[in-house]
Image 1 (cartoon, rainbow, N blue to C red):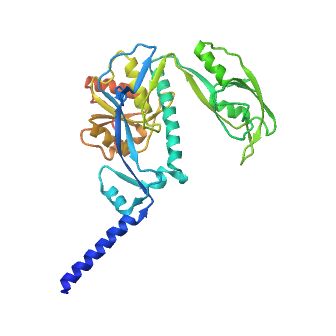
Image 2: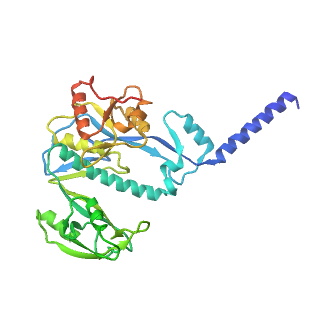
Image 3: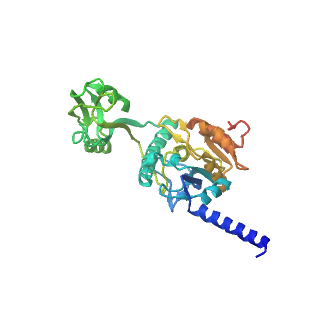
Length: 361
């Protein structure tokens, strides 16, 4: 066999072997890519994303799109070839598997966590939107979770409204832990509550002063520093003056909070917030209307632009990362609160965009 032919054959075999190795060698990485966007003012799967009943709503135009990121599953084994391709692809990001699924978290656990965060983000979006509009919202401290095999199991239940601990009024979830830790393990702690069922019935009937019940729990001992615990997690429940339903399937996590809140504000506000413009965005939101950072910001800006967005409401803490790779034709608008976002939308709707707060690398 001629030397040149032999060399070419050997090179081809080596290349083939390397390609095979790349396919079969697995690496501890996952991939993120732009996901779908959904207009919170429109429909999803044939039904309105936001449905408000019991309060006058107003026509809207334009878009207020929430954005998403696709990620490979926790059980997906990425090959070396796929990782290299992902690194080279402009619209995808390859990250360590541990970044998306820390401490060996399974896909089922991640899905459950994302569902809980999504549900909480909807509640906070409603609260923030109504506060922005000056509409009163009633808040109450409840038992969010009862830890299994804890002193509270069988005595307190999820949804119970906590009025006081040892006679001291409870006005915020953190009050509960502070009052419990005034005790030593083994001491009795007296809770004054409205049981969950009675609280629900009272809310439906408009009864603001339902009957209370006293429950005494013997404090347990926490691992570590040994402080007193009762084995519950306290949270906040809100009573709204009318019905706001948010329906969006196959989405999880807290990052749609800002866009849900703005959609609610737009529907309840006589003035059209967008003026027909295509605006997308992202960001967590608190009950007080503070906008927080999210993950995958560059994937979300790409997805937003691909959907047709011209403006992207960007959490202040994500600005530097987002500004390092901005899709052509997309303007990043920096926001820290729902108030910032509504002011920006007013400018965008009027075409007065010269003074919009922008993101810088």
